[in-house]
Length: 255
Image (tube, rainbow, N blue to C red; front, side, top):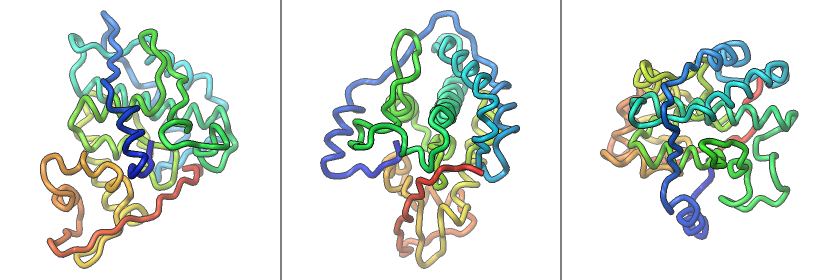
C-alpha cells in the first residue's frame, strides 16, 4: 500500500505487518509459465504503462484464469529459484491489481474501491482479501509487505509492482520471469528514476517520488538514498543537493 507511514500509522503498520511473514508453501509445484499474462499486457498496456481498462474487460476471464493458475501453483523453496519466486509474486500483485480495478470499473482511482471511510492500513483496497493460496486468504498488502519486502532485500521491486495509479512505476508490457528478472528490474529502475514526471533530479535541488520517502529504509540498506539513486540517474546528485518529495497522483493509470 503506497501511503505515508508516520505517527499513529507506524504503530498500526507494525501491528499488521510486523508479526511474522506469510509464506504459502505448496508441495510439488514447478515454476509457472507467465506467457498468458505477457499476452494480456502487450494487448492492453501501452509504452507509457497506461492501461486500456475499458477494452481489457473483454479479457477479464482470461486474466482471472491466469490468477487462478498462480493461486494453485505457489512457489516452494525446493524447486524454485529466488528470481522465479520474486517474479511470481510481482506478477501476481500486478495481475490481481488489474483484476481488482476491472471488477469495479469505471473508477477514477483505485482508492475509490472499498469503504467510503478508509482507515489507513485497515480498510483500503490493498486490504481486500480476494486471493486464496494454499488455503489462506491474501490481499495485496500481504504480497507487498509480508512476502516481497520481508523475504528479499530487493528494493527494485518498488519499480516493478504497480498500484494502478499515475505516480506508480509504469506497468511493464511483459511478465517478469526468473531468467530475466535482474535485467527487467534494472531496466525498471532506470526508467522510473529518470522519468521526469515521477522524479525531477538536478545537482542543486531534487524532487523525488514519495516511494523513496515511504520506503526509504529499503533503499538505504546498503548505503544512503542519494547513492542508490545516483546508481541509476543520468543526472548525479551531490552531497549538498536538497531533496524534497512530489505529491502522489492517485488517478487511475488508464489510457
